[in-house]
Length: 131
Image (cartoon, rainbow, N blue to C red; front, top):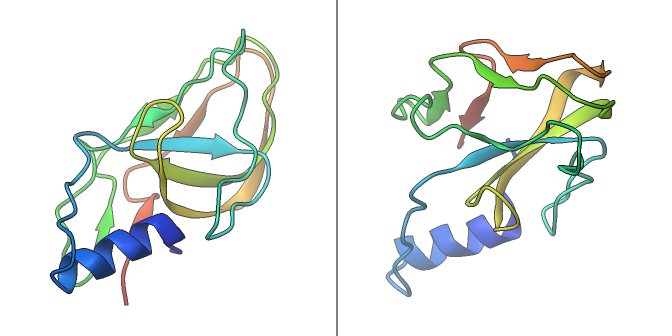
């Protein structure tokens, strides 16, 4: 999965002894309706009267092994209290709102969210890796 320029620079500076990178206390996954780039996130679902909020994933992500980590339990968004549109992408941030984008990627299949719908990642479905 692609890393943002922000995270790339932090990791390089940390590993090369330039500046220590303080790990985030909690990381959050966001649902997006347009793609991100290394420079910034795509369009996130609105939090205004929609029932949407980023979901904390720190506790559910496994310790890395062989350069990969994944969610050990279900990550659930919703229920939606208004339509969210068609979800196409995701991003991981270091804050519940605003903050710095760390990772990003596309969903394996787009999902249209109507009022009262949920969006979920089953265990093992959200994977991050370095190669």
